[in-house]
Image (tube, rainbow, N blue to C red; front, top):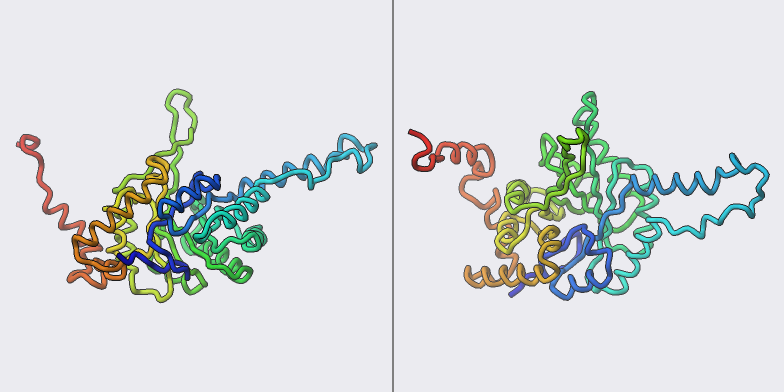
Length: 338
């Protein structure tokens, strides 16, 4: 069975790609993912806020000590080179993963501003990253900020990085744009090599006892993949040379098959791996192969886009018509309504 696919310019042995998660922090776990069939690996994210805070802390303790110890000479202060930062550790992990793995290693940057990402992008490329996933985690809380301003923020970051590095860039997007299709088209025009649909914005929770905000983290569910399925089906075949990755909610072989039928080049796996371990990659691959054999498909190319908006008799089923049909066909369970 031919499961090969092309993603961000790479020829992959199958469409199963672990996405950013703690599993990539360990070379041993990353190697396990590869051994169980992962065709590429997206590293855990490097966060802009963490780098900025760490840099400010080191600068305060190393370069501003004369505020309290004006009489101290240079030998009083430690050398900044003695400190290993989060960025240093991330770059080291890139190098170690590249040495240990035969599959492409994709670094992940999570941030909101262009500043710093150009230099960090260069360092990641120099460390050996095969590609870069840019996760622009931005919530437009300013009610005076227009949608155009938000979109321009994404495009500016992409243009600056694209002008500075030579490795492929994948944009991980949220579903919050008023026109997802137009935004993806503009990103492709600005040089994006691929997009991943969709990023999950983790929502804060309220503790009703302490009356304070508290962090919350809930694993994805298979139902969440349907949003990506719709948009991948709409985008499939519309933008040349743009890789389409499906992320969030792919837990089973059935989930993966739906996204591939819609037109995804790869499916990203995260929550299901954290819950079931690296062996889940093998289970999903076996399920995919079994289904293809039952359906008479010989290659992934025969599957991809088979149920996209370009292929089905009524493309409007991916739009409002589906909503209307479901509402009209709904019936209450016996005994609920009299």
